[in-house]
Length: 297
Image 1 (cartoon, rainbow, N blue to C red):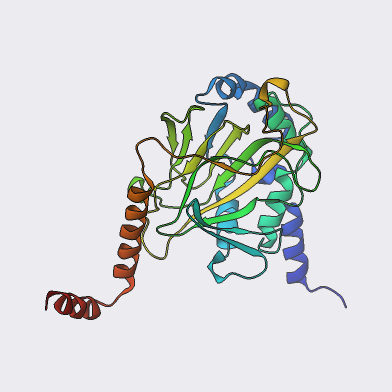
Image 2 (image 1 turned 180 degrees about the horizontal axis):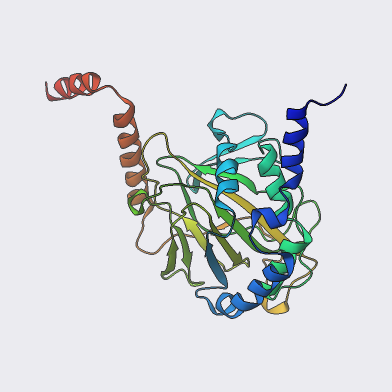
């Protein structure tokens, strides 16, 4: 059966969304950008990282956002984490990717982008993960959180060493008061050194070791109907420097850490408060009024 003109146009448009369309730089220019920002990356505290604003073509990234599903519906291709350490949703594999999202994710695993990351970070021979293990769409809804942690350090199927995280935030019109900051902590877990707001079209790249503690520990305060959305990609090498190896931690899953001065009791109190706010926001005023009268009787 012959494709229609509309089908052909849509196919051409999809095929044209290659790397240079997602970013305004040719591959050689992208590599040069990596070299220019290398010193900033490696000297950042508390560990090597960088936040790059307006990195991608805004119109294309808005279309990626439009294709981003709500993960709350669940299903076999959605993982729901709900425990004392995290309250979040994540996609599994590629089944939740829209057509343009899939194209973007493959570009982020392509040689031009890998070369940019190598120049930026100084980490050579990076290997992408086409399975997106632990990556893909991430979503945190009101009241959700992700406790401070260091990530799993090996790729399950291959045993490769995890070296880099790349996070692309998709949150338009995000306000400071909504929270959801990515917090970067020192290796002793004594203080938060940097907080990064997850605003739209912000790319965050950071080095991953057993001591690069980060997270979104405060319950999210955005309004109902909104959520904190991101795309996550992880990059690996075959082996890692000896100074990054921790005795007894050659292979580990996620390492969660308690923040100083924050007890479990106070954290649970915050969660209950966030839950009450959510319930109040979705409950009709007449029901709230009746409940208050009953409580006072």
